[in-house]
Length: 263
Image (tube, rainbow, N blue to C red; front, side, top):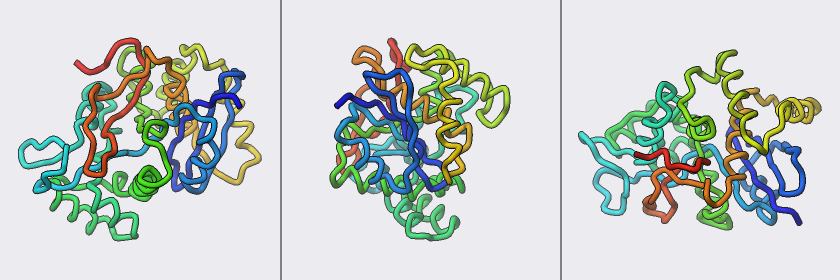
């Protein structure tokens, strides 16, 4: 069985995955309802699966088991702080990751104000609607990794960090604009594994699907998949020596570059 290198983007309650293999230049795409389905589909062949949700969460300001960074009475993941620094003007795309209890509260269906109040109580920070909205995916991934999943194979990546690393310089435009889409396509086309027009191939595969996957989600999944394809020399972590959370999960974002982004 050939090895696969997979990027997975959380898209409106569904998981869109793009996979490359050692034997074929052409990528494939699939959409799943649950992260466990992603793991069941790829785990026997995947060398690396890079997923765009936070892995490794803060506990609380009072917890001795928490590896997060405290500053001015607020707690944050070091990888989130570093990511905002390296991606420049796109720093707002790095949402504050919810604390573990707040994430579980959100996944259970609590309203945003209750979730944000709980997170502020735990970390000193409130949560945006977007950050609370990804909590269901965060809890799904955590439950998988604390069960049958392998945290050495299934790792966190942030698309904007991946694009920044693949580009060599920070991107200037939002992915929600036409010029931002063009900017990201140009970055993808600079990566040897990517063939010009691969995104069209994926779009055609999705045409017959019942799922409504956005172009920005497809490009994000490509950036994550191409990061998963990194050689040993190119595969890097932010921070380079990541701490673990209270459950033993690494708090990091992976990226692909010959040189570290961290200064």
